[in-house]
Image 1 (cartoon, one colour):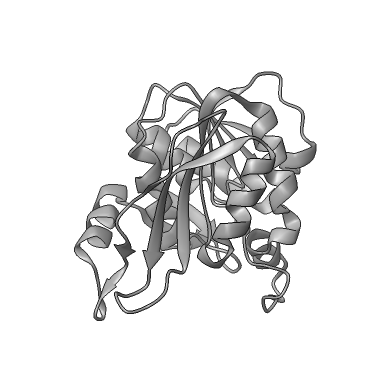
Image 2 (tube, helix red, strand yellow; image 1 turned 120 degrees about the horizontal axis):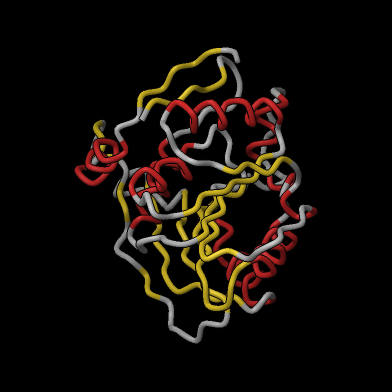
Length: 231
């Protein structure tokens, strides 16, 4: 997949590719909404591999709107893009899947001076409780919310989801290396579910200085080619 990205500013990284792979494990279908689309990478990859889904996305940064629309057109994927803050947008119909790589760095993290990066990374731009409340409102009953987040906030995530009657049913922690603590967590939550949580085996990103076998398989599956430019 060919993907245009900003010449300077926020660009996708391995988090997006790992989340894309995690999402595909649940065989998405029906109406899918990608929240915080950025250049469109996650939703477009999911749509490429699941051509029967109806893909929509939300993005509030105007620069990313242009990149996402261009990437959808170049890759010949039908795409409906909503511009604005997800928590304040109105949606006419509900969704079968909501997917997201949201801004998740906490307010205590060191801030970037780049406005695009600042908006894309820090959760004050999409506060956790408001985010989850809106997700619960626009998901169909017993539907799917799949996203990634900072692993250190996992306890807060579970509590915030419970408040809106959603439950974590699958969780996979991503570790930079075997001897390192998890840096990322990927979560599959459902509204109205009574299922117990399934904790997947840990995902190790690097084996020494090279990507692990699983990481390499995901990179090959995604098969992305990035071009940094100005649109």
